[in-house]
Amino acid sequence: MKARILGIAGLLVGDARAARVVPPSGITAWLTVLTAAAMAFLAVFALALSLATGRLAERWSGPLAQSATVRISAPADQMAAQVQVVLGILSVTPGAGPARALSEDEMRGLLAPWFGPGLPIETLPIPRLVEITEIGEDFDAEGLRLRLAAEVPAATLDDHLRWRQPLVDAAGRIRSLGLLSLGLIAGALAAMVTLAAQAALYANKQVIEVLRLVGARDVTIARAFVRRFTLRATAGAAGGTVAGMVAVALLPPVSGAGGFLTGLGFQGLHWLWPLAIPPLTAIVAFWATRAAALRSLREVQ
Image (cartoon, rainbow, N blue to C red; front, side):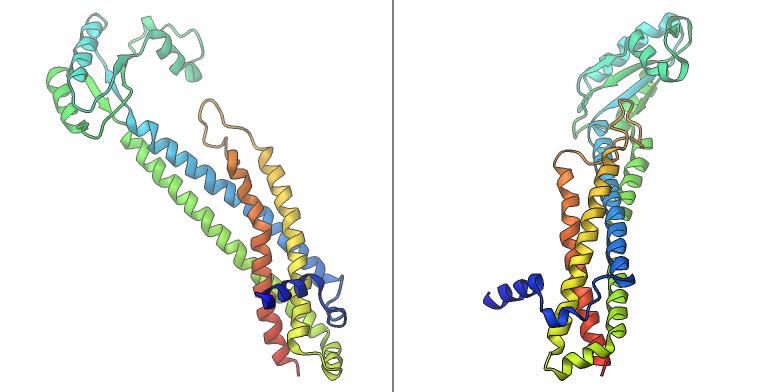
């Protein structure tokens, strides 16, 4: 534990002699900071997309999976009787919860986004909809379809599975791609930090030789690189994370119509997830720089 504390203290404070090896500014410094900021910015959006599609999949596989609709297409003079027959069948169907026929005002509201308000529902041959608000585990959709076909041929059961399942699968794949993107971002950051550290090491080959002559160990020199590049990457990631969170906050909120391209930001405690990006960036930069520094110092003789 004592050695670990001393190591952390050494990383934060550093060694004055070895720190001179690492250029405080220049192309490698700006490259590290800007790369970390850009990767953190992209990571925020990848994380937001993964969490949003996860919520979307839960919404599609949750309440919508527990409901169904019966569509009745019958002549106007037979519609009321057909609706009552369907309601009677649903009332004795195992697993089918409360069912009700949508009113004309509700039907008008459903069609308003496409045909505008004030649609004369009563004069149009529009099917009536019966909504089943709850579905139990013992609900037999296929059995209900067969009974409706026998007793009410004009009725059709829609349990939303035909269009809901592909959307759930797509949301799950998008979430997986978002997580894969986070891994690729971490890998790209590690590669860029490694290249920057190696460039700085080879550019200061003569200074390293002088430090060795005065007794500096390779571990001490490597620690200076690890410290400087880790702090640079962390600072850049912090700035990129803040910029990404601000950009996500400016995205359109959740639409009342349930549009897919709305509500793609963070919600509730999910806003805490991006705060983990700078510490994770520090970990990636630490190990990438350490490995690159020790390997390069063995080659610089």
